[in-house]
Amino acid sequence: MGLSRRMGPIGAKKANYSCRSNAALTPVYNIKLKNFGNERVGGGIGALGVISTFSLSLFASNTSFEVSFATTDSNGGSCNWSLSE
Image (cartoon, rainbow, N blue to C red; front, side):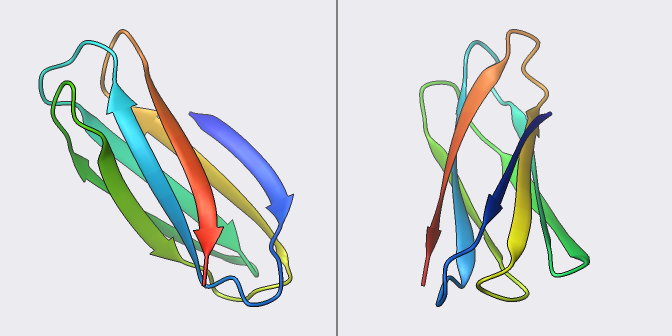
C-alpha cells in the first residue's frame, strides 16, 4: 500500500484519487485517508485502460493527513491524489 503524509492547506475539503491498473482486467482499488485522528476508507472496481476516480472527505483542513492506496492487480498499479475544496 502506498502511503503519503502531508499537511492539509486551509480550505481543503477532500482528497481525490486517480487510479490505474497495470494488467488486471478488473482491478479492485482500496483507498484510505487518515485525518484529525479519524480514518475514512473507500474504493471500488476499475477496468484495464481506464482511470478510476474516487474521493474521500477530510475531517478538518489545515491539519496533517495521510493518504494510502492498494490494488489487487498483481502487476501493480498507480494512484495519484490531490486535494480540492
